[in-house]
Image (cartoon, rainbow, N blue to C red; front, side, top):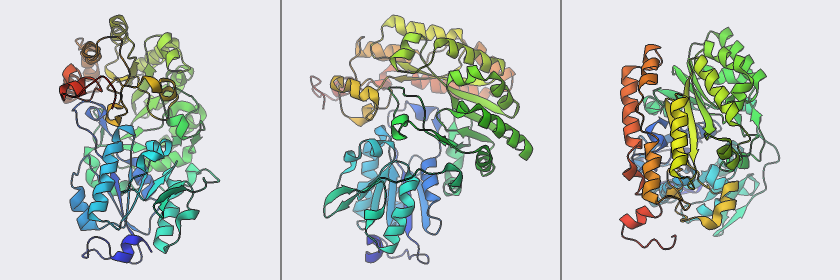
Length: 489
């Protein structure tokens, strides 16, 4: 039996429902500085909803600590027997603390962590509060882990699992097959219904996330996605994608695939099926510029059924920058994709990468490019060697810190050519937009409301405050705290 079940769990008041386990899945919270991705988006914890679908016969809850900050209360009330969480690199410490709190309050609960960071660096979770680390796609592990715990079996047969046995972590064999995405149960969107109105993407609130594929065939040096999926790509069929869409209640959907328009034949069929079903929704998606440049007719087709915005991985304003990150793309393709999206009236959320080695002229070149192309929605990140990436292998010896809080892509963990205060002054300055003409054009076209513009102004005001970037910088933050800065932690 599950250890928590044998001992009665951590709250006598909660009795098992039938023969089911009480399972709590937790989205950690690591947002502190007031800047960052959270300012412009907070998607639902879709990965947790997808693994939750593999435990239909158990009593399961999802706790989103970004919204409901009462982990001790939920643990005491629900008395979970299995607790799982996930973590990207900046969330590592928050996830560790989640599991530590779990063991403090529910010492007999079985704890497991998965996700990108845990898969690429599982040793970061070989800790007393962790019972197991799930590697790779969570569905491969979760169903069999739950079954083994429920039946009181040894965990050695659970694939892709590193688990504690006699005080030591041991690794099981990898799964022999990959998941067929068309056979996945639908995500448990119902488990976050109480949070739905808080999830948003830019100005679309409430928003729902839909994933229709996994992996990426490209090998950008800053990205861990292709490492996580071994460079392979799998996609749902068009028919299955429409089932995912029909299961969503909100008016707006964000496709969270890394490059949604990767297979133009599939994406064209999806549009046909959406029309046949009479679905009336608005959509956003993430794409590469060359996918758009090759198939402008596909963009037009999606525009006709409600494509509203595209997060476009432009990365740079020059071929030199694209080559530096192994983008395998060109500035010509970027320019053409921008033109196509503008012609179709689709909002561009332009994602750009800033090199720590930049000069003042490099910052000016990017500002001028954004202004020239009238990109109203922007996302600037610092080139960051995230653990597990090719860039990390290349730059490991240059790192100023191993503090994962600094690996949020908003702070340079590498030396900067400019002084660090000057670097952040220019970085924050990228968000200072003085030409409001394109925004008012979007209002006149009905793409944005006046309220959206005000909210956008507030977002830009926050992101353009250079001093907010200092506290988590590996040099300036230590200096502010009165700590020595001559060597990394």
